[in-house]
Length: 494
Image 1 (cartoon, rainbow, N blue to C red):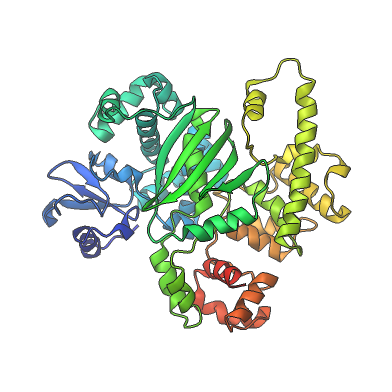
Image 2: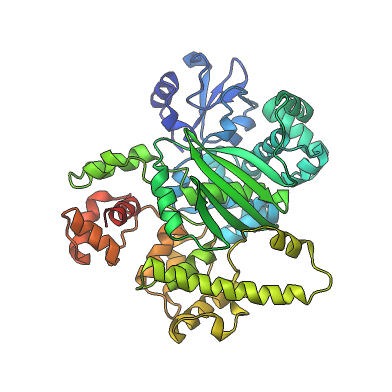
């Protein structure tokens, strides 16, 4: 990633929060690296280097600033916008793929050799996939040290380190402190009550229109999976190593997150999915500036700055919602989805009730009030009577589930967007609206306009915009590359 020194230095000199996560400031005279908004005295030009990632700064021998905590900055919005290999790799690394499958697994999912992938990431990010994953592990370990009372050995393996020695060496190198010193620095702050419970702050670039996010999620909330209560969004999670629950409360400058995890190895992917759900790595200043340049949208941007695109924690869940939501109202889709989940819960309860020795996973699911959405395998196990929908739609869901199980359709965060849409369109019962809706909400494409959507057309008409798909498509060219955000605004206008 090319960085202009003068532009970066001006951002540091003005302590501009908008650039947090875009780059990191290395100060050679002190041996530390900071986020651009660090409140410390602006370093002299000759002592400054700029890095595209925390891993690159660490690779240059710098440690993280204890004052501004650069490792906790919002992620770069580039990885939301970019659909190339580097952008896909960064999303997969954030989701913990390197910790679970190693660099060979990451390279295989992206379709490149390890050597070529390392070369591309090093050129763009200043660090290879192992170094980028190592930086993430260090941040995960720090969170666990400061928010739990777990033993250091447990934290080391939960954060993804291969050994306690590697854990100790990395934290000393990144934070210039031993793990025990980091815990002592938290003072008398008590860890959250309950095993596997972690409280942390998820940073974002202001502004954030929290009410719009919560409104969108509340009207689509599925009983037993999610709910919005007293300004907090609660939901169950299905994670790589087990289940979890999260409570997300928007606050000034951050979203307060309380996570309950069956397996602490899922902390990094849980955080990545929560950030993705609330679109916390977006750059609202750039988005709003483009949309506000249109005189018709300008009043909505002024009235509601910082509108985000609510995304997804589970690609398969979002695909099921999209297929069921085709050509029906949000209320009708929610009713059908609730019936589907009720059938699954009844079947699952019968299976568990006949099992004399319940697994820890089953016990965890039964003890907790909210659960993750059903998996592709679980959907395929449901009887015909449990779907409560026309045969064509039911078979479309089963076709999707079979494609996910056999690997012919990938709905992961680092998927190739164009290839995923092409494969989805090849499935019976999946049309352009469904595939594009998934591109926007599941794959994070920022430039999708659902011009054939009835609510979008109504919103366009309410604002005095063209309301037929061809004319709206032509008009919306001025909103590129942020047409997904315009879609949300049109929905709200409807």
